[in-house]
Image 1 (cartoon, rainbow, N blue to C red):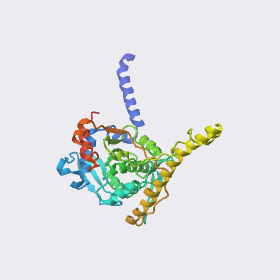
Image 2 (cartoon, helix red, strand yellow):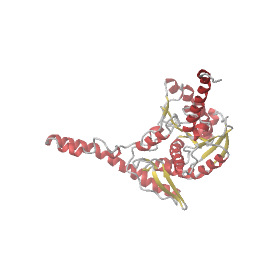
Image 3 (cartoon, helix red, strand yellow):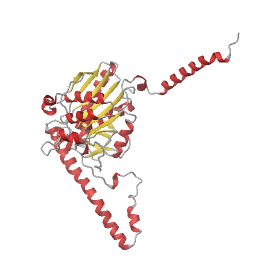
Image 4 (cartoon, rainbow, N blue to C red):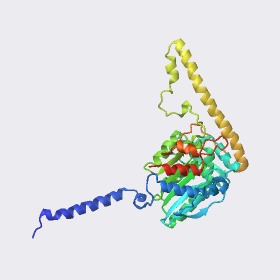
Length: 380
């Protein structure tokens, strides 16, 4: 007996639903089907990363004895690196659910680590660095030829990457395809560059494309210019990267930024300003030209001094600590900007009662404890 059309409807609906689900999964990238990480800012996830991060320092640096920071409960330490480069260090952790963590240490009391911070000229965001004999660090952190980054932290990234990438490969072979990347302070700056480098290696086929990275740059200073920031933010779009900032902390406000006319996009109203001035009447032309030079020349001079002292001069000191390192040509910009989707831990009156501004302790708002305190108040 022939079945009626009505009797086929439930079957057809189920079949259509199955086809839709399978086709949707097929269109998703491989990591989306298997990733244990979820997009979006996760307070508990960030908190656990901070607990791990504290263990990269001695107790004098983090006041762990005074503030009794808890130990991580969801991750086990797999590896802690030796100190390398300009006082850089990192730790590798793994959860029982096979999520790896790359945790990058910030600045310590060692003057060499501070040298990495002050070596603050910019270099193009793609190129290569001669780090040592037999080791040239090739990097491609952004496509835009106008993208540029902090040279000191790029050197730190170069040393760390040589140690980190083999560890990623080893964990990947055991089934780990999800990695959290985190750093606080200088470590936050390094986390930007490391993330961009790892994504670049995936594009080149040097790392498996089904690895998923998620980054928390905590208390990070400014690491590059506008064009690097644009590409990084596009890279982590969708909830895969965050910049966590205490609004009372001065470190995310540095390095100093100097913007010149060459830092603008190619299409801008200042490019042909001379032609506009020439069309004015004599008195207006003289006044406008004087005003224009008065605004243009100081920023250009400041940028040259930036490169002189925080580039060439600091580079000579770096070379004394890293004898085989060869300083590259610098990029003619110092237009540092804040990078990444930002989670603001807003300091209110109650916060300032517990963490008062201080001329003696300039890091009162920068440590792990004030960040964790504000995290408890964060409602999103």
